[in-house]
Length: 553
Image 1 (tube, rainbow, N blue to C red):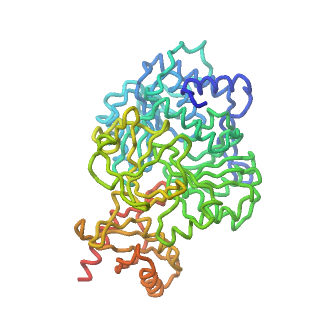
Image 2 (tube, helix red, strand yellow):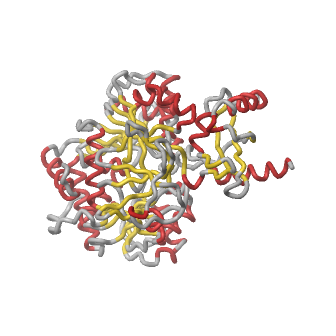
């Protein structure tokens, strides 16, 4: 499918629905069994195709058409996929966002896209009414669930059976906007990312290639976009009971039950779900014989979690640590066997975290570290030296070439290179002689000390293996160029602070990468992102550390 467009994949979906109409498309929780486990219902490919056609027809009658920006705030469900496919079939542009960023930040972001239609659950519509000025451009609404104190139709009232066929549409060009998605804002201001028809078609191909071009069969879905990709590949998509804004609260027993009950072959999940799953499987071993591949994303997965999953899952299972973002998914992957074959030890000695080789048809380069815009690649400086750290920049058919909002993000985050556009990830790293990328930390969180630059992940991996340490965070105190490196430490339960401090000081003199660190501060519990419980709020920790050191003086 190297020359595929999104409309070809939609046609493939329709043909699949016609060829295997009774095949389950979405399997979703609905109530409980007598044993207290989730009960499930399913919708077939034919039903999903017809339902999305029916919604598309009603949306057209309501004034939603090609190019209409439509906010979609619906929980993972069969309804969500029917709505998304309906919007895509008529060329409307879904606008999706992570509710875990908080209400006011979410409303601020959604105001910027000036949406003309709003589809959501009752709680989302309540916000729309409460913050009416932020949604004054909305002309069409649709409530998924019971309507409360506002007007407009409900999804249930529209029914699931189309009346006739949808009007013919001209195929979209690969560069036409397909969907607008927001970055999480966990490591910087949230931005509205434009993904095109060509981007999504490439993602479908790359996900298929990552699985060895093997049909996905049955997938357990914890990220809605992955569900769209797998439905375009003919997968049976199983949705476990979870709260999108708090993935870490998902009961791992329900995940195990879903894998065993439906013969799940592929699982995509963040560390927030994989870590509790590992703990559950250690306490209550389960064979999970059908699970062939596990893909981690959304946040960095700890190497000990990868190693643990390697122990509890089938020897034939493949476990991939993935690297990507809203702007470019995927960028790179690495399989557990390669990661655990000496690369973890190198991370613990100060090399950074190996995140693998570039994904299919993705090209990776390094840009010399700078906070300034770089307009064209001819203006770009490259880091000097074989292991010099620079900003990771990527280009490829799946990489978004522009932001919808804010406009300034395009100058700061994109580099023109003839017909290509490079995306600046804001991540720092280096590339080894085998083409593997080593992640060293976020550019915005780097330290500029009197001894030179220091990079968070590169330093923290050295100390995270110290007995009694749960995790660490490197922060800088003082003016840039003369920052004082401080290591904040979160202890494991029951650890002796004085004994851990002694071990940390001993390790600090063993590696040149971390030698400048002399300040260690014990923190009761790091501030982290709500959704994944993994992205550390180092900016908040830096303020806390500054106050602690000032208090000492």
